[in-house]
Length: 472
Image (tube, rainbow, N blue to C red; front, side):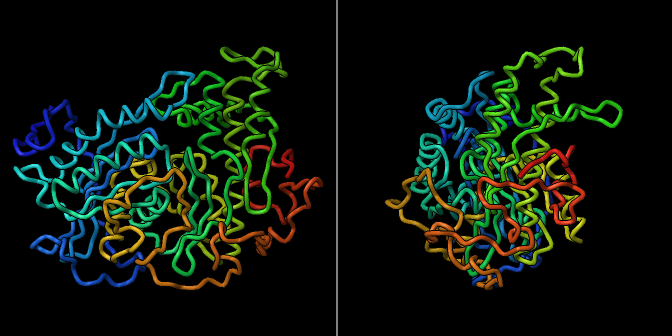
């Protein structure tokens, strides 16, 4: 149990049990490689030594996190000072519901704030005096958890007399990834339990080039994990990944042909999920134990096949976006982004194109408070009207598009790609992309086969376990 200062106890209540394990061990990240606009003069919220320190609170889903981030003008760097979080793990076979998740966040957010402040300022009796602003997740996300953490943010803002910064959850993932990997202008694949989007920056906003038209990729993985009885601890998607890793050169798993649904620049997972759920009701499915005949298949076979198929779909639309935008780097963000197989498949595709992959581990891919602090820092330093809000404008929203936020800290460069200058939500009918693979998009109802030996096949299919069996 770590020590808690008397001052922290006075305004945060009785100290609970906190871990002494450091949550922020990375060195400072320089600003220059990001290619952002020059920083304005230090705001009135900066500390006397010129440092700006933002506390970020994240709670859009089943993870409640608090991060403290510092900008040091002397070294022109950003550094995460602390980043603790707690995860609500639902019972096996169940998803996490808004009410229970909100209760979890309410029970832990005070303790997390205390832990974050103590780690960031271990020898200070009044750590709150260093905080320049409070950033919180405005949306998108689950209503109850969002509101629980927003109330905590409002309370701290009033107690400490510092401004509130309302942050778009998707923007936070992107900016945390850019800073952590030093990627200036990548194509972004954002994959999580609630979102699946391929994004590129153009003309002051992050434009959505492709996305899921039904459920998110993480939701697809989570729901399948419940069907086959995998645990939610630490997460369903990770346990699917562990099952799929049983595939080796010496002991290959069986690849089950699944629906491969790419529609233009968008993807669909709901039909695929229904199809694979039906497979678990077949007599040849062996939930536990070993296969005895060639017709039988196991949980590991299905997990492996599901990963290979949905990741190939994601890599295909990412490659198409790269070709369309003329970009050479890809940044993967979101909870599913720390999947090693997805990173490997994406790296193979990007390498074929002579580019680079920017990927992170679970510390920054999974929802965390530092990413909210990072986006909030940009909003505070550049005076974003979308983000620097009054108390009465801090009502959370469950629907908050990535392209709804003006990115004032990046140059308003205008890409050559045609429809990226409009937000997708503004377009009555979105024209098809004109990239090399988009031109050959099949008409609905007549999907041609696309095989690995076809020179026009995306690298995603060449990386798939059995590409010749995949039908677009």
